[in-house]
Image (cartoon, rainbow, N blue to C red; front, side):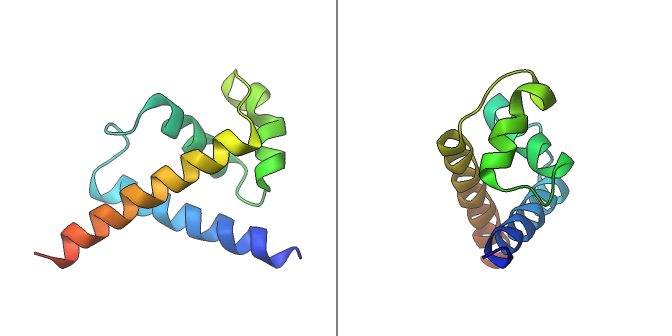
Length: 88
């Protein structure tokens, strides 16, 4: 049960690192940047834990559902960047 959140966290961190290396974070919206900050500062946390830490870490509350949407948007952005890279 503990392995799945850790695997997801690892994938998210890899996607975040790729986005940073390829285009940087300047292109991200504030909400996506907040999700990046939460994940990078708390790499082993579950979505619920990130939600619980959000106010302390970034100064505003983000729900578990809101974070889930952010990470799906980051994944979509990552996949779009990857597809551009492979089509060169």
